Amino acid sequence: MRFFKRRIHKAVSELDTVEISEQDGVRFLHLGNDTVQSAMRLSDPNGLELSYTRSMLGFLLFAALPAKALMLGLGGGSLARFLYHRTQVKQLTAVEINSQVIAAARSFFLLPGDDARLQVIHADAAEYILEHPGWDVILLDGFDSGCQVEALATQDFYDHCAMALSENGVLSVNLWGSDPQFDVYLKRIETAFEGRIICLPAERRGNVIVFGFAGVPQPTQWDALRHRAARLEADFGLEFGSFVESLRDLNAHDRKGLL
Image (cartoon, rainbow, N blue to C red):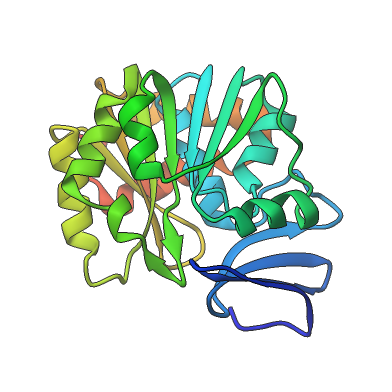
């Protein structure tokens, strides 16, 4: 996605240049180049405009709505806004290393201020995860300038994420399928979770979401997944039925379900 007609903000930090543009009623966040990092439709600010953000919530096919959710990488705050306004998640914590990104999310993307449910922390996610366990879901979207943040894709880091989850917790990771290191990252996640991973390609070609499970994911049979997807679509208005069918693309399966 290339740069848009109206640029409305630019801030330079030691980490990245943060720029915001708008076109056709959608506001976009860019970090260091014209790649879109986050998007918000002005007429539906609490929706999930980008398909990969919707896909990151595909973990709900296999796990209950979390009580405690940790977001590593804030961007424009799309997932934080959606979970804050449209779910009953009790504790939402977002960790972002770039203070200019936090400022942009608050000033231009309608991210609520901190309160009893939501807290945004200016910190290094790789360090934060070491001291803060007990999450039901970790939503990891670690990109800068269009590239995977190296410190958020090491074997140690994925291991630490696995250890920071609750008994039935889930790690939801956004990866770029064409990244030359994609297979390396995938293998690291698989190692951290002892093989308990499921891949979901996003509707927009390129992004692949990888779920790592602290326990055994359930359900895995197609009929049960479709039934669950129908309930989730009714609750949240996201395309969970399409998620189920897309699971066939990148995971071992037979006519009954995922293997």
